[in-house]
Image (cartoon, rainbow, N blue to C red; front, side):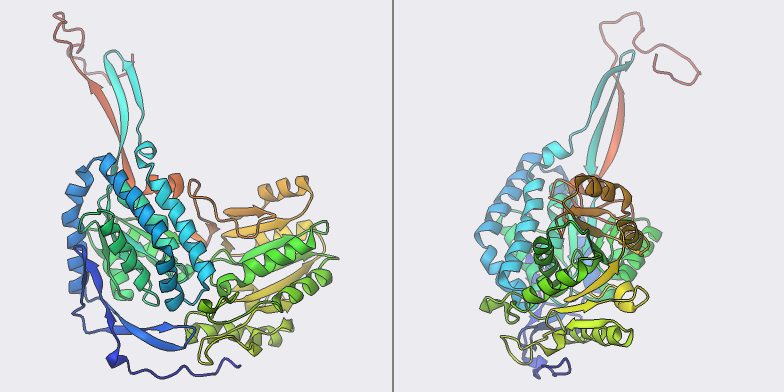
Length: 516
C-alpha cells in the first residue's frame, strides 16, 4: 500500500460535535467552527471537535477563576480523598479509556493501557500532596523571632497537551496542579479530544467540584487565549519545538510562569561490548512503539563499529515479525494519527534516498491488518544516514529509525552533543565505567543505561535540555509541585504579655535589623 491512498469520504454534517467541559458539564459550542476527528485505522472522520471562540475562551477561564477561592480553601485532607477516589476510578475504567485513545490516536490497546498506567503514577504522587507542600520552620532565629515557609497555589493555570499522549501528558500536570489547590483549564489536541472530556467526567465522579477542571477544545485561537489572558497564572505545554518556543515567549511576555517541553531527536549509542539482542529488541520497541509518535522515541542508532552490520540484521529480523494494523485487533503497531502526518513522515524516506542513505526496510510497502483507508506506514530502517540530511537533523515523529556509524565512543558522544535537541538518550554497554562516563559527558536531560526510553518515574521530573525545554521547570515530580505553587517566607514575633520590661520588642532602633 502506498501513502497516496485517500481516506474514505465522510459527510461531516451528520457527525456529532465534541464540545467543552465547563462548570462540571459537557457544553455544546456556539462558535460555529469545527474540525474533523478521525479514526486513523479506518481513515474516516467519526466526529467533529468544536474550535472555541474568544467568548467561549473567556467563559471557560471565568469559570475556573470563580471556582478557585473555594477550592484553594478546601482542606488538604478532602483534596487528597478526591485524588484517591479518582485513582480508583481510573484503575476501574482504564479499559474504556484505552478504547477511546485507540479510536482517535490509533495506538494499539496495550500501548494505550501503558500510557494510562504512566499517567496514573502522577495521580498516585498527587495523593501525597500534603507532604509535598510542607514548609519549614526555624525557631528563635533572632531573639523572640521565628521564620517559617508555606506554599500556596497560583490560581487558574493552563495546560496545553499534544495528540500523541492524550491521557498521560494531561495527567503529568492536572493531578499536581489540582491537588496543590489550583483550578485548571485544559486545552487538549484537536486531533484526539475525547479522552480529556472522559478525565473531566471521572474527576467529577470522584468528587471534584464544578469549575476546578475545565476542558476547552480549540485551535490556535484557544492557545492564544490562554497565553494572553490576565486571569491565567501559568502555562504548561508539551509539543513541537517551534510551538514550544512560541508558547514560552508569548506566555512569559504576558507575565506567566511557563514550562514548555519541545521536540527531540533521541540517540542510542551502542558500544562494541553491548548485548546486541538486547539492543535490537530495545531499538525496535523504542523506535516503532506507538508508530514512533513519542517524544522519547529512539530515532537514531549510533553504532560504534564493528557492530552495525550484525545489529542491523537483528533489527530487520525483528521488524519483519511485527504485525501492523488496527490497534483493536491485537496488532503490534497501529497507524499514524492523520493522513497528512503519515504523508509527511513517509516523505523523509524519499529524502533519505536522495541523500545517499540506504533504505533497508521501507515502511511504504506495508500490508496492514486493517482497513485499506487507514493512515498506514510500516517500520522503516535507514542505514548510513548522513548527518547533514534532514532525516538526521529534524524530528520526524514517526516509525523511521536511522543508523549512523561511528568509529569511537568519543565520536558518538560528540555527535549527540552537537545536536539542537537534548531530550533523551541511551547507551548500551556492559562496561560500567563507560556508562558512568557517558552519564557525565552527554548533554541531555534524561539518560538511559541499557534502557531505551528513560522516562523518569513520577517522583522524579521529566524534561530535557537545549531546544527540548523552554523555561526552567520540568514536568511532575518536585519540579511540578514547585511550578504550581508559590512560596512565602514568614518572619514572626509575638510579644509576651508577661514581660513588663518591653525586652521582647527592643524599643526604637533605626539601624538595619540583624538576627542577633
